[in-house]
View 1 (tube, rainbow, N blue to C red):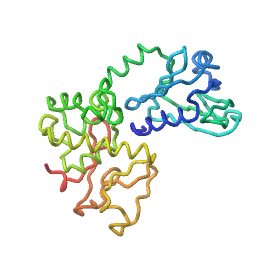
View 2: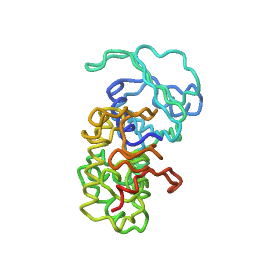
View 3: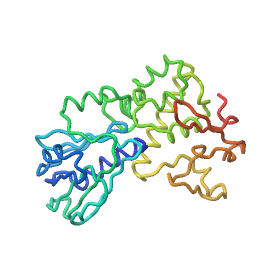
View 4: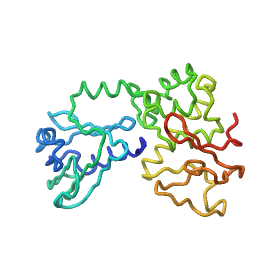
Length: 284
């Protein structure tokens, strides 16, 4: 499932291509026909993201809410849209030009968990049930600029392991399996430590790190979590080869040697997701 940086990147990509432009909307698959008909011929005025939820705002119509889930993908293209191939839930296309976008463009959504047209009130209800997002700066959504105060209030009272709390979208929105494993390793925190045993200083460091790492993820469109002294070039080791891309410390490195101590990286099931950590480095 895509992590929060991907969704924020998608919000920016949609606005870059379609912002301020009248779009043609269709649902070749047929599962979003009514919604597509309502936004067809309207202007995309705004895009937004909170955690793993994407919102596309259309003038006078409402918001298309998308949650990619495990299998959803967006594909962007330049030029006139070709004949659709496969199960395209939603296609946006435009040939109109603006001062900032002169080329025709299209986007195709396949396999999402959710694709629905919602009102402002329904959108706010989604925000209300989500936790703080390190990539948002609005105080109403507990974003990066607020220091994750709402998340800290829940973490500091909980007996639940910190690794599970970081994946709970009601606590921290947008963090997935990669970021939770990596940020806990970077701060040498045992993933099974209860939330209430995390100190305020540790939480502030975790939150600040998530803000920085996820912003880099948006910029680079990949997750890199190793510090400069631990890159392949600095350590003289081969680069990581993985379909998720990016250099990491422990994620999907079970039974491999830790980059720092050389001990074996472990994996276990926690809250129905694979957890990765180094028991030797993460003892605190």
